Length: 301
Image (cartoon, rainbow, N blue to C red; front, side, top):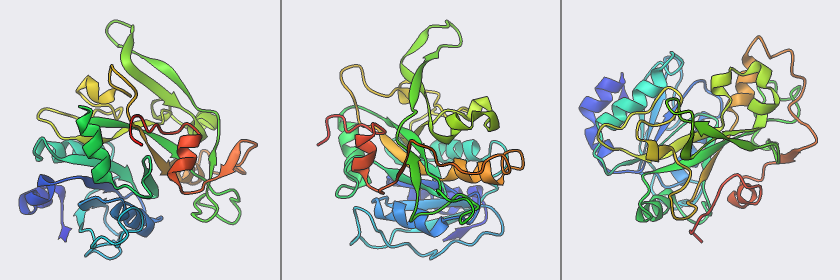
């Protein structure tokens, strides 16, 4: 179903937000839009809301067949919402508007086109099973790491995007304590994570955008707000684990940084290749991400 704006969607289709999990996909350009929708439909979301700027058409607006854990599931409804996703603050404002309009039981994921959510054992378990287990551990949010993907040959793939030949960094990831702005002391169970292209080409990335952590899976709650730095107003949402043991984390395999570095005039001609001695082929499988330490199964086996 098409909606001219977010206000139009919230007025006409509030029932979509009543039962999750719901994927919020923010479309910045047409790159790999079909594969993005298909991947998340296959993950088991009950609905996908695609926020689309003018001039970009959605493929198969009635639904996209699943390809991951729910390959035999019926088509997932895809709702097109007209939204200028490239306007500063537009993504944060849209997420907060959706949170405010949702009951406190609905789970969400938010990401962008040419990004692909992976979680432990996602090849045989779906997102509904994931959040059911996570909720049983009294967790309302899940830390995700944005893992940069890139094409190895930028002459053949000048936009740095290639599903068949996607590469990722197998090392070079690290975390720093996250200081409390008031006390200066490290926040409990919160870290700032770095690595990938944002670390290797940090001279082309604004300091505020170098982190690779994103609380991309979360449950709506009254008064909850997403902040400009992609952290949430409820501090417990920003933690990587509960006080008692490690919890699951997920990963977002993303071409977004590579695309930006090759489209930005300030970096386009400075980067001949993203490949280096620590590049490895991305296998499109959750086990590889767990083996590399890029997501944590926690107590879920």
